[in-house]
Length: 250
Image (tube, rainbow, N blue to C red; front, side):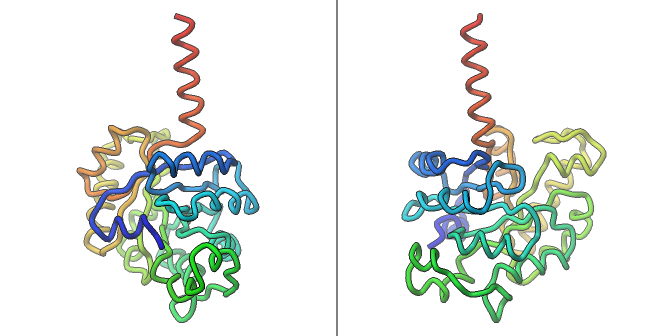
């Protein structure tokens, strides 16, 4: 039911990217080329809840796992993303054990959580036994992206039902007093990123991180990270187009 989770449970690395543009064609194209997952971005992307639905639909039946990054730690947004067929949710700015618990509670059906029941589309997408499979197959991914979260890391990672974390290196470096950088240069931030991976391993939580390029992603594997979002659809579009234009003007 969740190809990304199956891959991580088999100790295999997984790769995807953030989708910021409202396009079902983009998500299906990424599935076709073999991406393991896409993060459909409601926090910084141009995507509302209705758009999430049509962006997930082309991924059904593929090996590309649809995951939604909600805008905030809000029960309605989390449950709504799941009822539209997301097989995981990234919750931004999780800074404490209390916030992690609130997030997981909204993601899990009782008795593990307090998710409201009404899975019309997931039942169509994933079968009549979706409800019985949901808690074991939907990924709860807390975003660690502040100095406060690093200070509370052990408590956050001990949250029952938390599957994974995603490091946001730009915001993490920002909270250490630096300008946002996808690969921070500040040694304190780099040490924090290494500490997060090691602490995830200790707590049996999957470690993920957003990377600006493949060089960073390969380094993060060496640091102990297991899944990486590498770039964004908008970034690839504009970056490639800019390179083409510059090449033509030479």
